Length: 164
Image 1 (cartoon, one colour):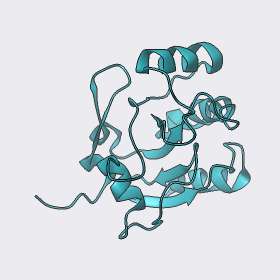
Image 2 (tube, one colour):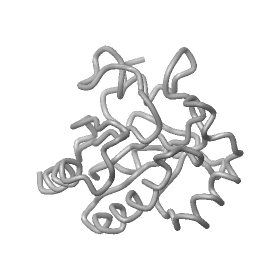
Image 3 (cartoon, rainbow, N blue to C red):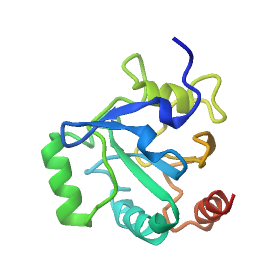
């Protein structure tokens, strides 16, 4: 088997029980965010949805990746997470089922995003860490959890990727 080289090489389990093959986002700019429903940063869902709606018609996607590895802040089932995101934040961007982003059970997507050969290696520090992937399926940038969706650095990186 050859090593994964682009985002399109991965499939996440979907929050709805169906696979979420990431090759469906080929040619788009994608922001991957590990999310949690009971975190101090959870209100970032509102800003992420705003980003998604602002840029989606230009070929921009967000993939929310629930993870319960940080202080147990995503304890719910997939159905509970989906309901929370829909009711509280009107989230319409794609979401995966819960996955691990660190450690031996880490999903292969995160091996690619943060592994030793990554542009931005090193374990995920907390919920709402963000990874920007370009239209070519390659990682462009990594943003720490404290970089909010409305942060000019993030928005400028998205704009540049969309224009490129």
